[in-house]
Length: 325
Image (cartoon, rainbow, N blue to C red; front, side):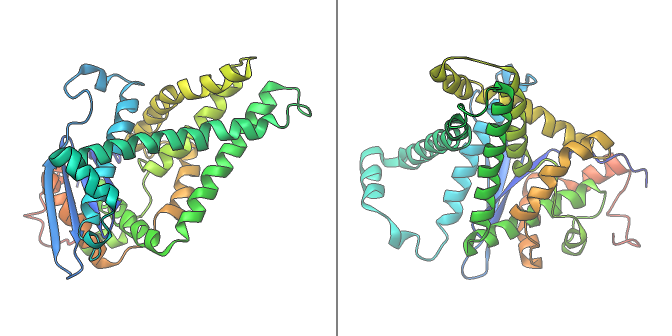
């Protein structure tokens, strides 16, 4: 078998409630294990914002659109998976009923748009603006703006890691994290050149360098570096700069994580990826075999992994009957 260095197979994914979403190009699939134990698979196309525009492929700019698209698709697939929960319909609120009455068929789209918008606003407020205000209480004691920027960054990292630790203690989130692990295991299995089977996937790592958890950690780290060198005297402008630089930070972080995914054996990449990989030990858990089965269904709905192994590793798995790995 002519094996290449581990390069991205181009699949991205996300854990949902009792299921896994996998995406390749414009095609995505969500597989959910329903309360009765059966699997429901939904395959659709998703084009995202600015579809077809060349700017979405421009380095350091594409990351901004990728981040927004991920939030939109993530919200959509989470909502889809929630519909299969036994008490989903019983918990419909008066607001849900009002939205359906006013917006009719567009109600779900409106809800998703509002959810994504609020998520972005809250994320910027909690992880970008709040650390600045907390660190500003030290202005009387710390005169160096560089040191203050570092302290602000440490606070930002502390809030983010604390948030991850806090939600990881929730029972429902633990199951989502197990499906998150199943998602990673399937992608790692393919990118290592192995047949995508439950057995092989279970032996694969649940950590992956292209994970959204690592991306968010890169965002925190890149912000520290930028805010150390971009100095503004006016307090209002300092807050404004932190908000305006969010797209720039996201763009840089996206390029770093792409580099990590395509050059996973590089020593420097391993070093800069290490903190994100450590954090994934919190956001992923070892899945059960039936969870991996769900993830495999989503992979196979959007990606011909057999052809990938043939092209990238020179391996025809249909003819390779002697080696099950």
